[in-house]
Amino acid sequence: MIERLKSLFGSPEDEPTQPDSHQLAVAATALMVQLSRVDSSQDDEELKIIVDCAVRAHQVTREEAEDILQDALSHADDATSLYEFTGQINEQLDQEGKQVLLESIWRVAFADGRIDKYEEHLIRRIADLLHLNHREFMQARHRAEGAN
Image 1: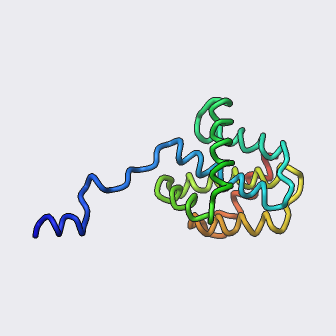
Image 2 (image 1 turned 45 degrees about the vertical axis):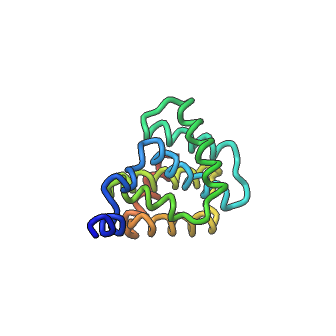
């Protein structure tokens, strides 16, 4: 009887492990990749900004950031929704960390010098999924705009 109850509720060994920092970096970078593709014109400048953001946010070397980008590109190809990325991020980052990520996403959007309406819509969706309010959304945009 006890064994049946254990199997129903699962044992501590069956619990999923926390994503490591590489998985978190890939999830964050995959959101930026999704944004770079939304306007149908992913360019080298956007990919360069994504790598720069990964270096800065995850304190990795440029080569490691490029590896993260390659992982993110393949994960973004296979993704069925943004939830698989934002879910990991919500578990791992605090509110401030999510704001910094959103600012990086805005930097990717500004890479080509203009914000496409589809880019802004996707960033709004990402902000909502990250539980960021309108004020945080706009602050991240203004910081990114000032940095470019």
